[in-house]
Image 1 (cartoon, rainbow, N blue to C red):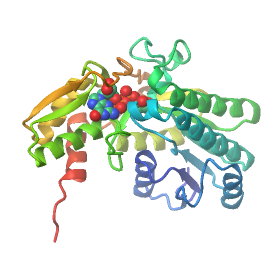
Image 2: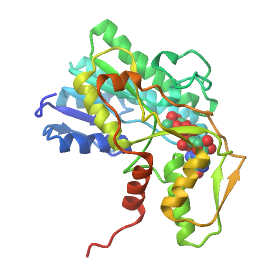
Image 3: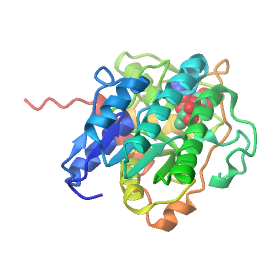
Image 4: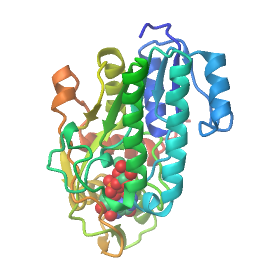
Length: 311
Ligand code: GFB
């Protein structure tokens, strides 16, 4: 991409899209195009066709998606399938129709089988059954990968697919029913500390292992891939460091300075026992993350909850 290339960021207000927008602005890309979902409903075929024919972007970061934690995925199964399929079908197809130079599609590590060999290499895809709680979302994202590759095969589209691990960072979702574990625990421990509540409920057993990546590291990886990766097939983007949910809870408890007790709600699902990605491929291309989990959690907590009065 040149600094003046016309770049469309689909989903620019979400955690991933806003991180990509920040990164592009920081790197002095000056010709950025983005629309709010009220101005452009990416699920609407006609609106997306009209947008692409009018704007003719050269590069597309497809970061728009319906996302959420384990409970949201398992509650809104139809929406996770329909919304994500509609968004990606419209954007990938109209990128082809309007001669986009290159498109980057974003998925998630949940595309891999529940019991895939760990760490999970890219070739583990479709080798086993998916985690039931997020199967609709995972199938939508697998369809997106396959659509990117099919349009490359038949029409020569330079579509690439990046599969990030569990993400956290600015503009995350803190709704306790819809969010992922890291923002949920930050909020729970912060509010318990502020309100002198003696115990905090944490879901599941605490045994599952999760890999985490700060969204600013992901944004840098997306820019790196857009400028350096031109192959079919998806590529993992992870930190290669994992913690158990119990360890994560204790890290967050310490960062927040909460001194109460944790109670584990076994009625809530654990989900996939482990989903550590093998990041050899992207590391081999020259990218690796910079933000450690400890420092990332501290910076997110300070930015979100410790509002410094600058007046
Ligand atoms: O982050 P999370 O919702 O999604 O849950 P997944 C991770 C683990 O944290 C689960 C536990 O074992 C949860 O039971 N957990 C403990 C909590 N306390 C909480 C809490 O207060 N809130 C939440 N949300 N979890 C998602 C997929 O799976 O990973 C998505 O459902 C996507 O589709 C995302 O792929 C990256 O990591 O289990």
